[in-house]
Each structure stands twice: as structure tokens, then as C-alpha cells.
Image 1 (cartoon, rainbow, N blue to C red):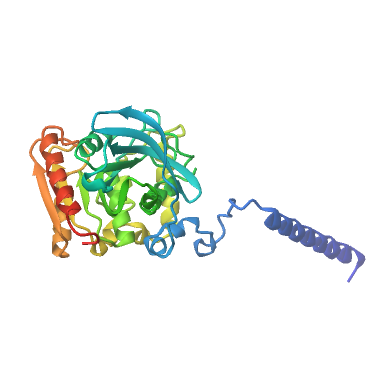
Image 2 (cartoon, helix red, strand yellow):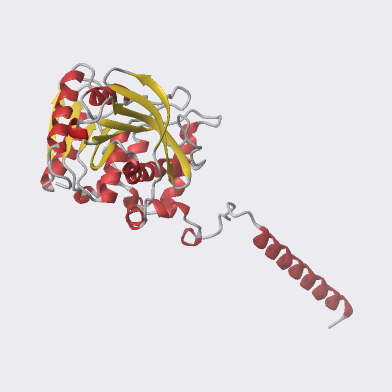
Length: 344
């Protein structure tokens, strides 16, 4: 081997060693959130895996003390409060309606958890989407709790991950359920759920995870699985710009590369619902097609579930034309449930 060849080999070896050292330094000092696109999907971190239904069933929900922080309004038959509780170390606020006097014989009040649908953060205020129905139930001696959810009202921030912020909401409700026992005016043995629109999807998630008999009312509920329940409301976003729709679609595309969507999807767990349900749907709903709700209810009945179903001709997403009839039916449903022995 001549001197020129030796020099060439030494130079090549030096370059290779230098590149190897640089690569090692990059890997060791890499920011946790930066993942090479060359890494196979099976080896990438899966931080959202903890939110699949199987894993959510395994964990504990400690909740925390429900604090009545300040009065929002006072009515003759009830008082509305801003309340807060803890969900996985974060503060969640909401509106609580407490009947003005204790129930007959000094007993505590049965509780209705009120879950709203979609709301724009820019216009949201505590009680939006639930306060009218909550006021009605409070007037009829039910204690109501309507969480704002993280990122809304005076709650702590939500996750910057678009999908994690969504998957956290059933967890927040499960922690709220665990917290009810800390509220002296509440009967923690008699708890029900009222939910509207996307709140219905949250409610169904909770029922499927907890697998306990919690009487539940659903108004125009989102019942399709994930991610169809998100994508069906999104058209093609306009070209250019940092459009929110593009962010959501990109997040879902990445999610589908890493996760099994069936483990995060309510329509895969309908058989696990143990709760009596009452469902309302308007035939002129601009967001939820009545055929979707028809199919959901039929699936539940085929599974042997206890469900009352009411349809309302020419009614919109908020059941505006027959609102009085709808809440009256719900009041009777909740009264019948509250008269049952605890746990029945």
C-alpha cells in the first residue's frame, strides 16, 4: 500500500469517526419531543396511549375537594356558584346550582352533571350551553354541576396537543364524579348525567369507562366513533395560512399512524354501557343527522340496553321548538331515578 492510499484511508476513517461522534451527541442531547421521521412508528413514543379506554379503566380517579368559590347569581329557589375541583393536578372550574334549602327531612340533594357541547373559547363563559337546563333542574330540587373543562372559564390551561385536550375531557368528568362526595349538600349515591351534542360523546365515554349505572340524558348526541366524529364536521381547509382545520387533520393523520383508533372510539364499547338512557333528537338538526341517532339507539336496543328515545319534528340542534316538553320529560326521568334505592 503506497503512502497516498494510506493517507486516504486515514482521512476516510477520521471522517467516519467524526460523524459517529456527532450523531451520538445529537441523540443524547435531543429534545424529547423531536422524533426522527426515520424511526419506525412502532418505536416512537406514544404519549396518548394512556387515554385509550382499556387503560383509562385501569387507573384511579382521585378527584379532589369541590370548592364553592363565589356566587354567580342568586334566585329564590337556588344559588349559582363558580366551583372548582382538581383533575390530575389541574384546576377545573364550572357552574354549580345549589337549591336554596335542604331537601325534605334535611337530606342531601341528588346531583346532575351537566356536559355542554362544542364552544368557541373566544366567546365562552361559565354556564354556556348548560345554564338554562341547569336552572330548570335546580328549581326542581336537583343540585347541578357543569364543568367548564380545561382551557375554558377560569380553569387551568388545556394541553397544547389538540387530541390530548380532547381525550382529557372524560378524565375531567371522572375526577369530578370522584369529587362529589366532598360536597356536603350533594348525595354522592345519586348522581346522573345530562349531556348535549359533543357532551354526549363525553358522557358515553365516561359510561363506557366506568361501567356503572349512571342514569343519563342525551340531547342530539355525537355518537359516531373517533376520528369520524371529528372529521365529519371538517371540509377541506383553504389553501395557505395556519388553518386550525389543517392542524386537526394533520394531528389525526399522525395519530392513525401510531395508534389503534378503535381503542379510543365510543362506538367500539357500546356493549359496556350499564346505564339507563334517555335520548332526544330533532329531525331538523343542522349538526346531527337524525339517522345517526336512530342507528345509535337501535344498536343499544339490539344490545339489550335500557333506552327511551324521543324524536321531535322540525326541531333544531337545541330542540328549541319543544324545549319545555323535553326538559319536562327529563325531569320525570331524573325524579324516577332519584326515588330508586341507591345503586339500583
